[in-house]
Length: 410
Picture 1 (cartoon, one colour):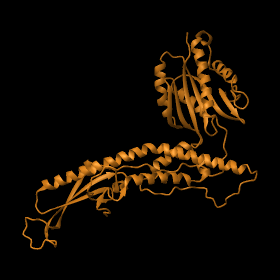
Picture 2 (cartoon, helix red, strand yellow):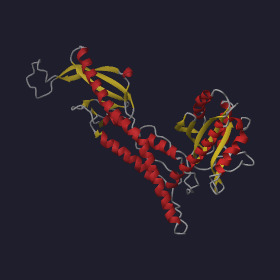
Picture 3 (cartoon, helix red, strand yellow):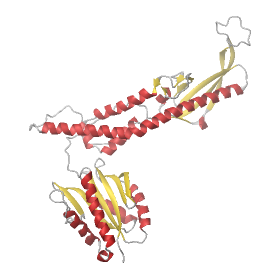
Picture 4 (tube, one colour):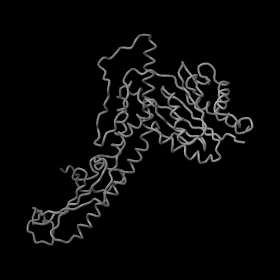
């Protein structure tokens, strides 16, 4: 059933985009607080971006088709015809030519007027996923109809380009907008919890609170699924701030330079011997709760930083022994991470001559891992940083920095 006579005429696109941004903020603000805190921040950002991004319509020229039917055509304004009263319609039997223009994307954006548009609205209707445009003729000359249709199609495409550009600009801003608003909401929730806890009384239990949360369905596109997470009270766990994380990695990198500059000293050392030198350097700077530990007695964890008996930084030191061994090393490292927002590192020693070949393989192997989420940055030619999820809980994100060092062979 057709539902519109004109395209790009019902709403102002700027206002629609502003409303979409406010809707994203409202959805974040009304989400259950514990559900929000217990869900991976990266997954939440992806969810809200997917939910509120604009899906600009795309015309499919190759699928355009046409139909024709007999129709009564009003020729009262045809001055080549001898019609006595032109104030009334005068019908003759003619032909209606109907063009169907398939499209994909958000149908509502076809109703929005973009910043750049034609002064006169484009007459057409929308039926399901097709733009429908009718023309009536009283003869059988196809040329005028084809010329009119081509002109209208060109106007539709030109206006859609303006819609597309505005949509892309909004979609590119959306992840940062969502991330910032999520951060503000999280900070407020945690401050609220701290305020209540400072009174020294237990918090009131809300027995009527729901243990699930469904975001209102406001658009007609396929809805993203909110990541599964608990609504139980959120308990913050100790994390290592980025400043100390970067400092630990800089100590590791500094020690690696010592390896490179003193080849005779380290030429015969195996993994465990090399690990000890990194631990010595870390123990020299981190004391007390945040400290470089020795090996875990049962699992041979290489480097740990502990707070309240929880490992908040873990590094594994491995020689490069091929793709399978590298992937297994990641699995081993993830096996130690059972806490929120951990900071980890995989230190790779290369004794092969072709370091460039090793470096070329690492990004591909990382991105093939089932716990990989996204690349954060390429720190240097031999250093990479990624976001991973915990092996047992996708809502537990962790940073994985891969550091590759050449170990002397002679």
